Amino acid sequence: MPKHTTRRHFLTQAGAATAAAMGFRQTSAIAAESTREATRPAGGASARVVIARDEALTKGQVGEQVDLLMKMLDAAVQKATRTESAQRAWSSLFSPRDKIGIKVNTLGLPTQPAVVDAIVAGLRRADIPAENIIIWDRFDVELLAAGYKLAKSAGAVQCKGTDADRYGSGYQKRVESSGQIGSCFSRILSEEVTALICVPVLKDHNLAGVSLGLKNFFGAIHNPNKYHDHNCDPYIADVVSHRFIRPKWKLTVCDATRGQYQGGPTRNPEYAWPFGGLIVGTDVVAVDAVAADLLAGQRKAKGLKRLERDQRPTKHIATAASRGLGTADLAKIERIEV
Image 1 (spheres, rainbow, N blue to C red):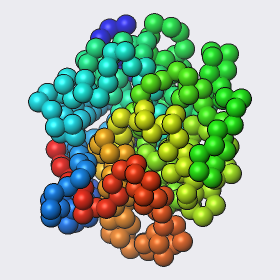
Image 2: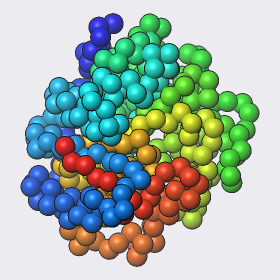
Image 3: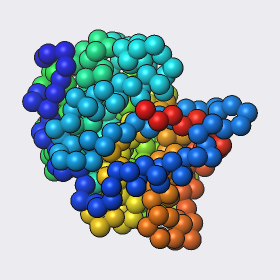
Image 4: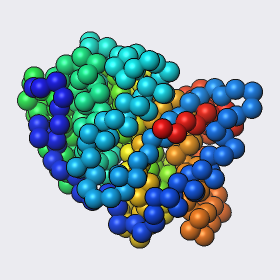
């Protein structure tokens, strides 16, 4: 396996960036408006979230922009970790001894394989062995539909669903309790990985308000359908608080190459727009808070009602903060654009 793993080795070409019609400059103005108050919070920030953007990502195939995504991601991770170089940034988060699980989202508008390519390249530059990296989600069939190439052989980057039971995965037989949930967790999560990178998509959710990093781990349990009442709250925080997730979760890289501000989590091109970026941070709640704010800004620009008025408040983000999982208060989050 070469040091820089690319689409040619384990991922297929991704689809088009979005079908939305908004221009990059207009979207930039919306982002600036939504971030103006929180960019330099009074009294000092307790969290840092980096927004990396490039207009080139709004044009053509995202799958052909791996080199650009690598450059953007390295810059974002370096800023997020306050380190002197990209290699030091990745090394500050992960050790070559770690077994790293990259949790993607393959439902509706999926995580672009090219974004995951960029993450793997960063890990490899930090001397993480290829065989210590697992790209995963719920089902093999969903990974395939999202443009991923399954890879389950030892000695290379793996890409597999939890349902790949004959490859040693599947769900635990034991039911784990956390808060109000009782679930069997993916054995990839409980037995195979020691560190996690969450790679959600910037998108709307018809019940939780948004489907970002926190919500992404509903894809780690066998019975997420049971936990969608009350805007999925407090169940999202209950899942993420579990020892299989929170101590291992080191980084969120939100795929914001294109976003969806209404009609999610299923894919709805009518409400997609080319954001052209990545949202990166080590405070997992802060990343979701900033991403939710960007979605709110886009909804406002399009004349849609606030999520609270639509009976879809993003309560789970505040609940996660109340559990000590991170920072939800936008006034305490420093936003850096690169």
